[in-house]
Length: 201
Image 1 (cartoon, rainbow, N blue to C red):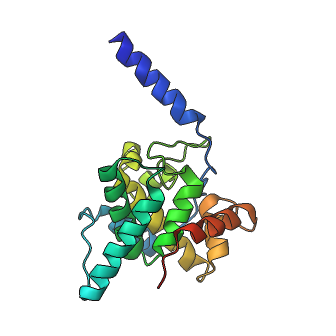
Image 2 (tube, rainbow, N blue to C red; image 1 turned 135 degrees about the vertical axis):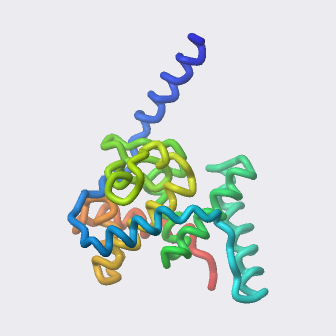
């Protein structure tokens, strides 16, 4: 029992020692329609099963999955974990109308692919989602931000909302996602990381 408690304390310390880019989204007033749309997006609990318009799209997805898996192997060495992560990123980014490489770049900057990352300001998980979002558009269960698909769904939905608010201006939307709108460091870091995850069209 003592050993288990010691391990839990050590794990918690490691979580808090990870200082990501902070992911310090600001709690902003939202129109009711935006709040409802985000809430509905989060509630959809369907598993990340891809649907393809034709065989060529399915083949392209398999090529993407193989290429990204090779690139991510060092960060996520477990084959099953890596496969599930990439399938979920692909599904959630496409669902939100985002470039999958952009989302992978953002995750690289935010958490370095650490599922249990916690920033100095309390942002959680792969996409460093601030806990207030669970009250604003979710069921107030902050622990779900450590669930892979839930975290990715929150993060992609929030970034999509910020892109819409900024009329498609990615630079400003990324700044808003990080709580540093108008400052260059964070958007530039994500845009630079995105280069690593681009896949030829």
